[in-house]
Length: 129
Image (cartoon, rainbow, N blue to C red; front, side, top):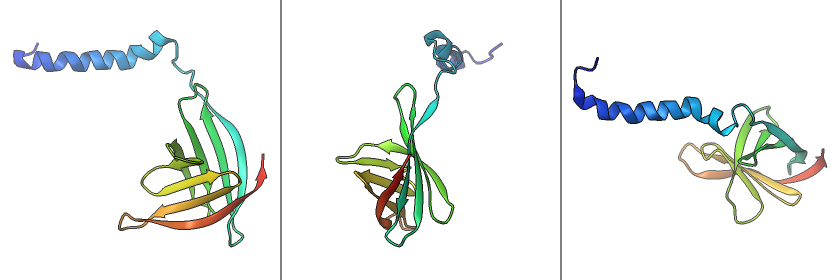
């Protein structure tokens, strides 16, 4: 039993939210139906001759597109698609920005001071799968 009746109004919205989180997906028939599909795989070559692998994905409901990139040093990053004026831009807004347009791409990385610098400026698609 609640000793402090004033806590009851605060409890109810939290219980409603919990119920929606637990039951909501079952009500809309979408529980477990979301999956990601590879839409394309592209190998890029940097200006210096290094390789960057990119695998582009989309959720089956169309709500999200993202890319998984593997850098020349083996580092991998998963970046969601974000709004861009031209081309396709993917960013986690913390560490990397991967931007593609046509057969070209570039990668920016965030410095310790928060500014962005170009890590791989002129990447070119050399193979699409």
